Length: 341
Ligand SMILES: N[C@@H](CCC(=O)N[C@@H](CS)C(=O)NCC(=O)O)C(=O)O
Image (tube, rainbow, N blue to C red):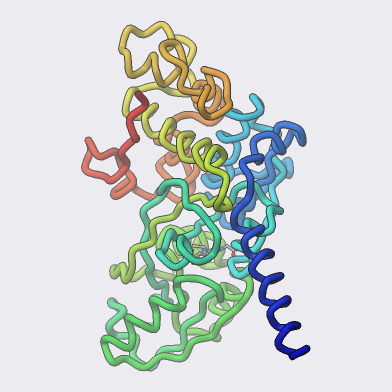
């Protein structure tokens, strides 16, 4: 009886704890404003996405998404504390509230969305998994990787997709998993693995970090869909909306030709869509708990979606990744700004 009572109490306590963790009251905006700084979860280092520059400042695509949110909320893109987390630990830091937002090459999947207490705010990059091999391996397709040793990071969709793909094709492989991407890539570089696999943009970035990038190729196949999205903790709709609509605003800005350089000038535009985006007409900031010019602040800080992409990953970066799926919907891509009206 005593044992039964104890287990009921323990069960109730666990339910309350989980309920508390996942059903937060909508207070994040107040907390961030009071703290005066946004806590942003990023990765330890991936050129183009999150890395420190010569001055020790964090730069990169995922970094800029957090700077845009900080500009919208705190009117200052510098008011961000970046917290590098491994792929394995990244969702825990959102659940515990250690970070206000996770902006870290995280794929939006159903299980992550429905069972981790997370809310994904909008796809910022459409990616897919690929493979990198040494040229001298003389392999032109992933289908030729039967019996290969493959390196990657744990806690990722990568290891799961790999199993699906190889098992479906009835190919054998030996998986070597690492907690840190740095360890995985150096194992590959030292010849411990025949191939290294991750999201294709990540491959392009990691390839540049190898001592002999021209000796490696990225195979043509894309074996999965990796819609990468920032995530927040479930239960605070206002905060979720702030992140979701900041992303939408950056995409709308590109659609409407509003740039970092012309944002002030564009506020004089007669185009009602531009006027709503920049807070000159209507007040779309109010329900978010933000001033009318929240989106203008974000655009002024980091530029529109296209500028963020090209600067960090595209033609103005070392990676030279083409826009392809990440182009605007009007230019053959999938980027489509939710309407602000
Ligand atoms: N998108 C996949 C993979 C995430 C992932 O591990 N990304 C790699 C690069 S594409 C990464 O963040 N590496 C940097 C690091 O862990 O330091 C997922 O969400 O599981």
